Length: 334
Ligand SMILES: C[S@@+](CC[C@H](N)C(=O)[O-])C[C@H]1O[C@@H](n2cnc3c(N)ncnc32)[C@H](O)[C@@H]1O
Image 1 (cartoon, protein in one colour):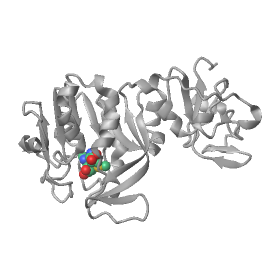
Image 2: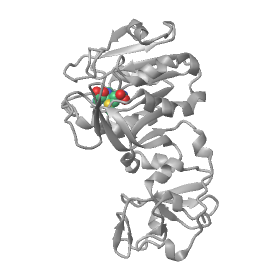
Image 3: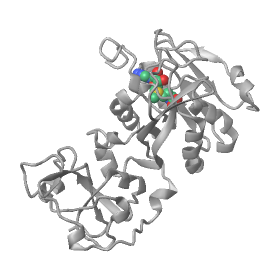
Image 4: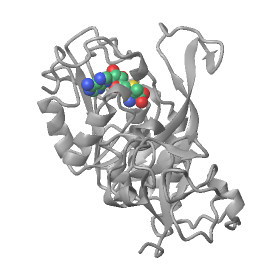
């Protein structure tokens, strides 16, 4: 049952405690300026006064010509702190631009209101906020990513969500990517996130600046269904197909390409490419046939299999190849 903590994690999940910087948000949001006019934006995993998502939309309210921004938080009634999830209470903030933003001090003027429940994005009152919203923008808890995206799609919402690239292969997500209902945003790779004071210090990918702890995370990307310029750019690698350089898999009738920059532009058959390809994917140039990572049972992928017993992963000369997306040039399919 959504929102029932006897069923869901009652303990705070460490993987969920990564807080997004304003810079990371600005660097992505600048590619979607034309989508926000007259829209209601919801940030539904966000401690309102510490969330940089909420901060961004208040700061850029007039520039984006927004109608309203709503932020709801989870298990937190101290809006000035990151949630400790030590209470069943929660708060929310609504901003409609009436209080003009001129500087940091104006955030304190936006009234903080109490939610009836704990702010779980799956709770009835939070779903009511979702229904009101046009676009959802946040970094949701990674441990609930499947449910989070499913809820957005079921409610037919536009979204721009930060997540981990491994989620591409989730059964709830890959079909959406394949059918052009969800795609990767502009930026992806390694990014720094603020972590709680209690976070254990690490030797690598960790820093403390002005007393604040940060952790660098790899494989991060934005998941969205908002159109963006990058999705219309034609990729050109300058590479041509040479049989000896692009071996076929032992178990798929497709060639293997180890790097996106090595995709042979003149190859008409199916190619297995790394997941990073999706950050450059233009659906007018290539179509997504399937994937080799989990058992893709679509008719087309079954027809490509040359060894029905080796279903997980592509193999070349018996050696397992890392997860691949199967693609083909548009107009070349039978
Ligand atoms: C990865 S953090 C990101 C926080 C914030 N969106 C940001 O980007 O800085 C995920 C947040 O989701 C909250 N959260 C965890 N479970 C939740 C739930 N069931 N419903 C709503 N929020 C939840 C956590 O308290 C945490 O603040």
